[in-house]
Length: 120
Length: 280
Figure 1: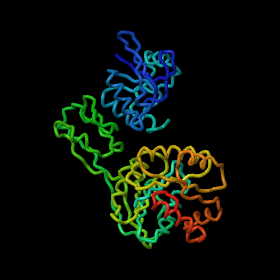
Figure 2: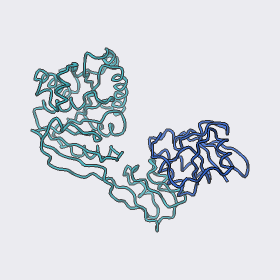
Figure 3: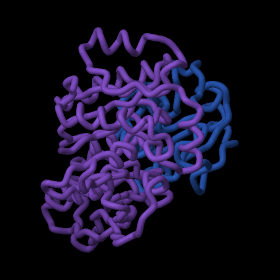
């Protein structure tokens, strides 16, 4: 399966970004192939509105099944849920630390958005 | 003649200029309060409310029994107000600008429209000044369509003053577009200059003639004057930093009535604006 992590960096050692819609990049880990791929989210960062929705579309189109991020607002959560992407809120410092927690099964699947829109 | 009073920076005196100018017009005039998030021109003019119309936007409603999740609607909408990812579309009505594009591109006719209320337009009569004000509903973040609804009440042949929202974003452009002349109000401070430069770029992009009103002369520095000289922008009026003006304003009064010595200033401004900014 493919897991997406929000980040401002380029590698698994980079910080896990607290934001979803306006995170600079996503690191997508393919658990079967054991690969890491970076996806640019600049278009959403620069969007006047609807950044979360656009970022959610990017995630869905990348074939991701799980998203690990700091926080996720209501519109993005609705798009992700509708498309069958599981959302996990995580306070880990780095992407690799977040991946460890995901593998260890200590992350709980979110049942709703955990912040209002435009929280950051 | 349609004059737009605008300003990159908030709190520079747009409404003061708009209201006092309306007062010295000497003919029937329409004052369009397009600052729909906080319209306040009526507070100074008073008058009787003659009409109150609800303004709505058409937003999409999807008939899921007709939808085959082709995704055309979501690809069309640049505002992400409708999203379809191999699923039935999700509608985010609060993001919809009401263009009707999704309905037109849907190959299966699965999209209809419903009206979503965004605010009201009120018409107030006040001694020859017809104030038309838009009032955006609390929680709505979609000002341009309401600004356009206010401007739809321009009357042919009746001069109009448009009190624009502050800034240089979409609601301001909706307010200023179509004006015959734009008066940019600023103050002689670094903030005033920074936001004036942005506003000048915006108005020039719209290819409209413009002039500058400098309010609170005496605070700050000379850089706004230098900027106007350098850019060839006429300075239409300079209003001194007079505490009495602030006191009149704070009581909801009109400067040209309470302080008659300022009447000639605003009459000169009127004449210069009517002359397209040239010295009278």
